[in-house]
Amino acid sequence: MRESMDIKKITVGLFFLFAGIGSSQAGISLDRTRMIFSGDRTSASANLTNTSPDVPFLAQSWIEDDKGNKITSPLVVLPALQRINGGKKGVIRVTKTSGIDALPQDRETVFYLNVREIPPKPKKANVLQLSMQSRIKLFYRPASIVPDNKSEIWQEKLEFKKSGGKLIADNPTPYFISLIGLTKGPSAKNGERLTTFPGMMIAPKSSLEIPVTNTNVNDFSAMYVNDYGGHPEIQYRCTGTVCHSLSAEQK
Image (cartoon, rainbow, N blue to C red; front, side):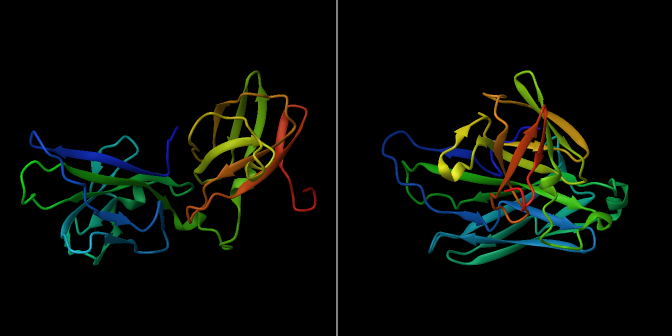
C-alpha cells in the first residue's frame, strides 16, 4: 500500500472572479499527522486550530475506510461540523459504535480522518479563495494488541529479503508499518538513497515488494513513522539474501 505522505493537504475548492486576485487566508489546522485509537479506550480526540487571527471558519470532519468510502460505523467523528472563530481552537472526538467488534481483533485496521475547512463567503469581488482539507491515517488498535511497554519498537521486527532488483519487506507484527525510505547508511549523513517512493505502508502480517536502486548493499537504514509522527531510523545488516535489524550491541 503506497502512501505519498503521512498527512495530506488537499485543495477542495477554488473560486475566483475574472480580474484581480486577493491573497489566500489562513484556515483550520490539525494538531497531528496520525491518530491511534486504542481499543481499551472509549474515544480519541484531536485539536483543531483556526490560524486566522480574526476570520471564522467552519470545520467539517468525517471518517473514510481504506477504500475512501465515507463511514459512520464502526467509528464516527463528532461534531461533524463546527464553527471555530479566529485564533480559537476546537476539538473533534472519534468514538466507537456497536460495529466495532466486527473488526479484526488480532491486528490493526486503518481508516482515514478528514477535516475540511469552509471559509466565509468573500466580502469583495475578484478574490481567489482556496479551501483546504487535511487527511490523516487513523489506526484502530484492538485492546488485545495494545503494547504493555509504550517504548516498544515493533518496527524492528520488519525483515527484508533480496529478490532480483527488489527487497521484499515482511511484516510479522499486528501493526501497520509506514516506511519513508531506505538509505545506504544513516540519512542524516546523506547516505545513498535506495528507494524513490515518497512513502509506503506495509499491512499487518503481510509482505510487500519494494523496488530499490541497489541490492548489493549489506548495510542500510530504514526510516519509519512512529505513533507520534516522528521519523526514527533502524539499521539493518544482510546475511546472504536476508536482512535483519541490528541490536544495540551490534550497532
